[in-house]
Image 1: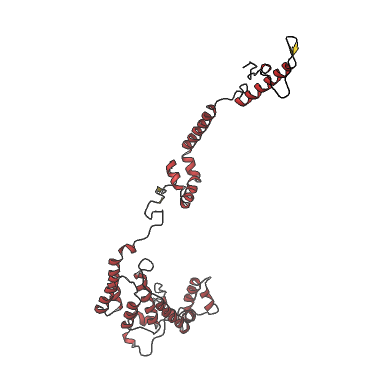
Image 2 (image 1 turned 60 degrees about the vertical axis):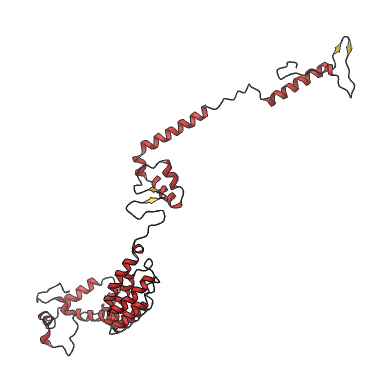
Length: 325
């Protein structure tokens, strides 16, 4: 509202102004402040602006039935900046100071540590509970619990040389930047580079639509992160379309290799007997011939053999083709 000037020529913020203290000298105020405190109220326009700014928020509840812009603003100030709210913020600031420590640059930077303390000090000051500079310095030094020997030495030097919180923080920021230069650098994720290029297992995956050879695919398959990335790469439709010729060529070569392997196998001839089958056929032929010759007569006599003896003259062995051996 400091930027909106109505017809009266006075900034619209005059409607939501706070009252002057009783001991304020009117002549000491500048022309702008004098205009703000003497101009007629344009509260209707201020109410319209507040409704627009707080629409569909919980703040709208606190002035819903108020028809005056100035009173609506006072209701918001009482809720969000009143005595109860101030007490709550004081308690939060003290709790924040109590729980804030600086132990390591990699886990919680000195910059954040000093900022948290400064914000808490400002809240206490705003609500009438300011801390003296000696107390601010005591809190700053006591909560610096980094065990680095050089850092401890610099704390002692700072304690002796500086008398204000702002000066001490500026000096310690310089110390931290010098001692913990590596800790201030962002850490790279495991197996993945943090620069402009992305790598997994040594494979550059910055451009997922490019062609990946077999060695790169093998490396990506070595870890879970690599397999997830490979799944995205292979599932990209635009990538498949851009490399359609290469993919079709690979598939065609694979089919030719499979066909060549199948045709290179020796054909099995069903007419050719295996050694085992040859032995069976030879045994059958031998048995049939010797059985037939057992009862044949030779020179008018029947050759008989004793039950417990074998006549070698009457036994003839044949091969699988029927040839006597």
